[in-house]
Image 1 (cartoon, protein in one colour):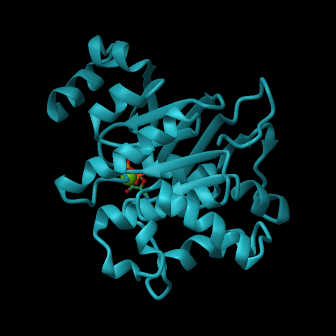
Image 2 (tube, rainbow, N blue to C red; image 1 turned 120 degrees about the vertical axis):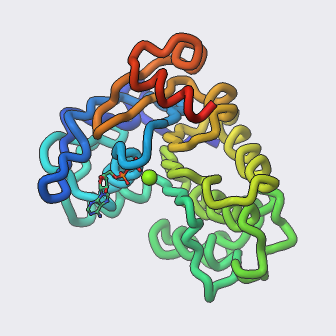
Image 3 (cartoon, protein in one colour; image 1 turned 90 degrees about the vertical axis):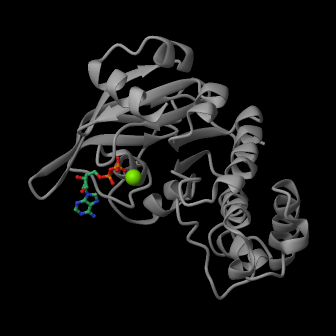
Length: 250
Ligand code: ADP
Ligand code: MG
C-alpha cells in the first residue's frame, strides 16, 4: 500500500518556512520532519495557519523563505519537477472539490491517466478497486451531486489514492459533513493509517487524533507551539494556549 520511499529520509521536511499574506505573517519559522508511515494531526484555532501549512506542502501556496522537501527532493517554485513532486502529495479538502460534471469513476481516473500515463482500462480497473475499498463499488457511474457528503468525501479519498501519493494532506475532511457521516470518512482514514499511509491531517476530531495520530501539532498564530504524542499532548499540554484551546473543544 505505502508508496516506495527512500529509507531514512523524512518524507516531508519543512525547514525555516515563512509565509506572509501582505503584512500578515501566517507561517512563522515552521520546522517539521514527518517520517514515512507517520500520521500527524494538526489542531489549533481558526486563522492559525493550518490550511496554509497544508497548501504549502504541494505548492498550492508559495512560501517566502525556507525550504520544503518531499522524500529528500527540494520542492521547486515551478516547472516539471514541481509537477512530479506535487503528484506525490495527495490533497483531501473540506469541500471535496470533485468535478461536478464527471462521474465518480471519471473523477478518479483523470489524474492517473493524465499524470501517471495509465491507460483508460488500467485506470478504470484501479479506480473500481479503490471505490470498493472505500465502500462505494456501486457508485462508479454516479455524479457527485447524487451522493451524500460522506460518500463524496470517500470518493475524494479514492481519487487521492489513485495517484499513489507518498503522503496525503487532509484539510478538515469532516468539517463540512453532517454528524452521522463523519465516522464513515474517519473509518476510511483510520484504515489508511493502519496500512502505513503517511498522513498530515488538520481536524477537530480529537477521537481520531487519539486513535490514529503518532504526533499532534498544536498551531497558534502561524507557529508550531507544541508537538507531542497524543497521550502526552491531551494528557498534559504544556502551553497555556493549548490548554485554553483544548478546554473549548473537548
Ligand atoms: P486556519 O486553516 O488555521 O484557519 P489559514 O491557513 O486558513 O488558517 O489562515 C491563516 C491566516 O492567513 C489567516 O489570517 C487568514 O486570514 C490568512 N489567509 C489565508 N489564506 C489567505 C489568502 N489567500 N489571502 C490572504 N490571506 C489569507
Ligand atoms: Mg483552515
